[in-house]
Amino acid sequence: MKKFLAVFLALCMVFALCACGAKTTSASSTDTAAASSGKKVGIAMPTKSLERWNHDGTYLKEQFEKAGYTVELTYSDNDVTQQVSDIENLIADGVNMLIVAAIDGESLTTVLDTAKTANIPVISYDRLIRNTKAVNYYVSFDNYKVGVLQGQYVIDTLGLKEGDTSKSYNIEFTAGDPADNNAKFFFNGAYDTLKPFIDSGVLKVVSGQTKFEEVATASWDTTTAMNRMQNILASYYSNGTKLDVALCSNDSTALGVTQAIESDYAGTNQPIITGQDGDEANLKNIMDGKQSMTVYKAVSNEAIVTVALAQAMLNGETIDQSLTSKFDCECSYDTTSYDNGTGVIPSFLLVPIVVTKDNLKTELVDTGYYTLGSDGYPVSAG
Image (tube, rainbow, N blue to C red):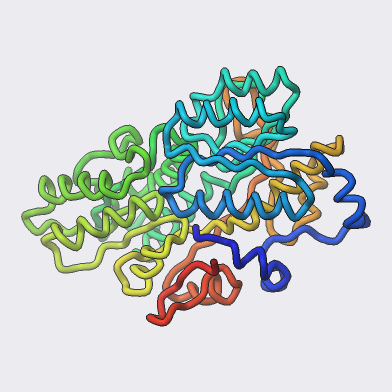
């Protein structure tokens, strides 16, 4: 995901070009300012080392400030201890609301219990925070759907049909950070979609690595993903065995896998490589035919839904399915799917899209999320 400073400045254009936006309501800007006056929102993001968190943090801050709130934004350098400290400081600073994208969804129980005691509501942003009753709502994209879209892309591209075992293909999986609750949803969505073909032998995992724990990538790190794929290629494909698919859960891992294939793959074909997020380097690879697709999640959509939800909560409004009617993008209210270990967390889920070389300009450039640089490759609108 890319920086969205310019998206904010051109918000009206983005709305007109099909980004998610809040529909007009009867409340005036004066009413909104009055409701938010003196209220402070604390936003805790994981790190600046992944492009998407820069975009999320920046865009959320801009949207809350536009709505009249004071905002404190922190980044924790992928350090769990630092994020706990950051949230403690936000609580001490008297925030009225916490928006938290967790580094490790299992690590924030104690500090968020403190927030609950202080009557500070919490929105779990993008990643589900587990094992605490402090979380009021969860806002994310349909993370299982992300994996489904990746798996379905493989099925469609290879032309797979259940019952047809006349051809077989080789596939390897690269999943995300075990500490990220979303990573298992991404992986399970893809694996479940492809499982009938794996079970029938149409898709063969030559390395035998099919469990999440075997294919996970700590911190979504590009170098870690590259090293693991280099080992797989050396161990199972150095004799010329063909690799048809490298299913990667996101773009940072896809970038490492692509680098490994470029340097260490003995085959002559270009494997299908999936991704997620729309990082600039990966979009360049898509245009150059090195990566096949990415699943794109418009950060502006997620931020706008989060801001509207936070405002409704701070105003004491009833939160239910009706909130989704205020948006021009597809967003569902889910009260069954996401259990954080203390019970089901009501969730607002947005729908991601598949981006390929064929529709990249339409979906990303024409909508104002990216521009084309002087070299013809997409760059962030910021």
